[in-house]
Image (cartoon, rainbow, N blue to C red; front, top):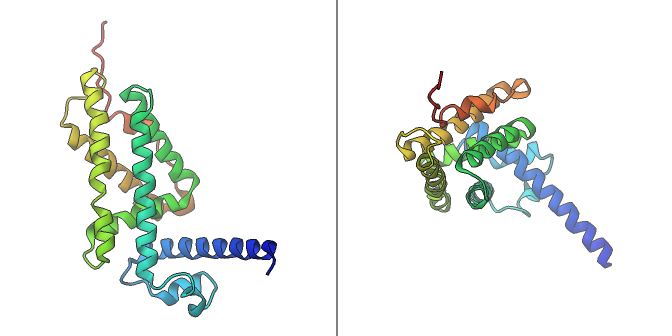
Length: 206
């Protein structure tokens, strides 16, 4: 086999693997891991069950890979956000705007949030997935630090910083569910609505 044909075959494999992942994500988000069959994934991907097994050993392997990728990307994003030379207010504003943009522009964003929620709630998931879910704490820790910094500079309301982190992430989870329900009709709310939960009102001088 020539190097060119080998490269082409690898590209085809990558495309097919991503096709399997994308269809599995939608199925897991809508039906859950337990109710999703490997045949559901192969049918949605328009390939045989035998061919699917050339890429993944089981539906659980696909689930774990999707979950790991979701957490790795989210953790990398919040750590990068924390390192930016911005004020806490600017960091939270950027986080909200980028999250809402993701919901608007990429339907898979909502599906990933639903997948993460299912993994955090349901017991019937692989042990490897349960270990990945523990990374959720880091997301809250980083955002809590950003909120705490904003409280110190007088920008954010003085509620418990951990509670405010919970409100932030659960708001995004709620939007993910609403996005999935609304489908193409979904339109992300104004970022200022979410920002209002954090910003300390400046007393009027009038």
